Amino acid sequence: MMYDRALLQAIAGGLGDQHYLDLAARLRVAPATAWRLWTGKTAPSVRVAAAVEAAYGLSPAQLIKPVAVSERNAA
Image 1 (cartoon, rainbow, N blue to C red):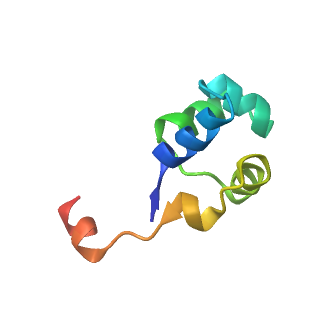
Image 2 (spheres, rainbow, N blue to C red):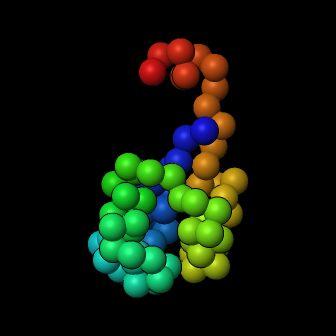
């Protein structure tokens, strides 16, 4: 699975959230959690994915995509 942080950043930016602290405030998560999401260090948990969907309209399926076998072998 691959988390698409660029999509989250683009949608958040469209709503005026330009920094991970904006993300933290909108999602009501700790700044450290928002930073990890913003930088792609971690994928959202189920609870955070639900908050992303509620705040930004992005479903977990849009945020987290399956990785093709060829991409996994290249990593």
